[in-house]
Length: 210
Image (cartoon, rainbow, N blue to C red; front, side, top):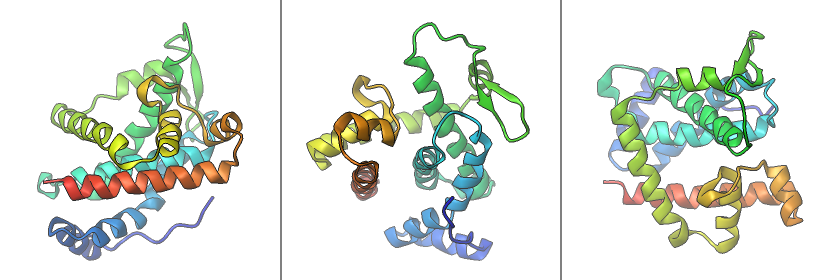
């Protein structure tokens, strides 16, 4: 697994959050980069699920970006605590989305085990994944905005990759390897297009946030 930068100190985190609120994209990017270790830590929970670990980290990164964009320090919780929940939820939603695409899947069908060796099934995910109502509404608005930005900011190839990767517009979510095989291109090329597309959406989303 990749080596990630060390987390920010509490004071450094506060300063970055302050600068981000004042409009600094550099501060936001710093918060993302220095919290990637947290993404990898949460991803380890699913190391026995039949998913590529790099794919899970990519999914978790989306959750991290959303967490940093919606974090409110006035609620009293640390960024890492809030982000860990968002990252975990993003991974759970991804797994549930993939499982929903299969026909007649039992809620009790095992999808893997956590790091303690306990079996994870869909019923557990559905029972434990209860997002805050306000956060759910905010998430819905953000998703709607992202859907509006996709055709505005991305090329046709970038749109195709993201739709296949994250199950947008009725597509079944695929791994980078599956997309590469389907489109007859290398996985590294799929990864580059995905990261570039996400970066373009992130930049446009941040510029349009009030």
